Amino acid sequence: MTRDDIEAALAIEQAVQPYPWTRGNFGDALGSGYLGLVSEASAEAGGGLQGFVVLMPGVGEAELLNIAVAAGQQRKGVGRALLESALALSRERGWGRVFLEVRTGNLPAIALYRSAGFAEIGIRRGYYHNAAGSEDALIMACELSAGESNG
Image 1: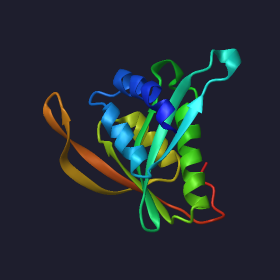
Image 2: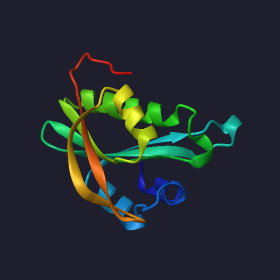
Image 3: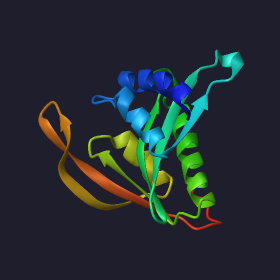
């Protein structure tokens, strides 16, 4: 992901997330050295951004901060491919673990993460805002090794 991708990523984010990142969030993430990966449709499919993932590097690990897929591209393997790319990049960088937080009500995302090797390691009570006030976050982690493949 580059700064040239921010507008398209922002459009996806605003369309599919109840509490989306802002343009500033994307700019700050890239400016801070976070890693963004994008999935683009082929020219035959009309081109354009299909989805993205943002990773925040840490010491020996990374946090998956955001992943989103355009509404018309969901349930087609785009999210899984982005997640697998993020895990592969993490292995290449020598990170031993990737962790994330996900809304406890986001069952499709939780199923995707579990199928990719993530396990639940905790709960953050009232972490996310929602229409009812707040929602818990499920903390998940995927332990990596250099030769491992979870996909």
